[in-house]
Length: 143
Image 1 (cartoon, rainbow, N blue to C red):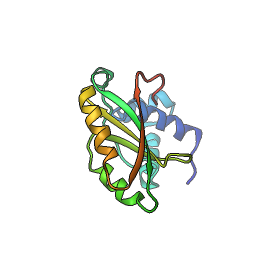
Image 2: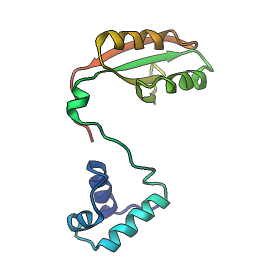
Image 3: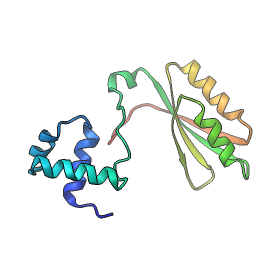
């Protein structure tokens, strides 16, 4: 799969607003509408663009309390813990990491009490040995 600089520019524009009309994308990229449409179709076909999703407003996100939960799991418990975490809707992302912790879960809740309940719930999962949580105060860069 070969990604050009124009493809990267296109991906950046789509990352900002995936609902931009192809004509607008073409104008911003200095390409024809047909060329941009073909690039989008190629990027989708090659799996570079896996889908389009929802990006929540800063106003809505500001009403949520988010945290990173670092998780150490028991040996051979990764798949079971991952499945349990996937079933918790408030877990917005789950990352495998190296170091003393095995996973980092990003969670979001409408209140501190709910966040506390979620952190306790994660800590009680079979296979979870230890957690360490940090509340996100603000996001400085989001791309």
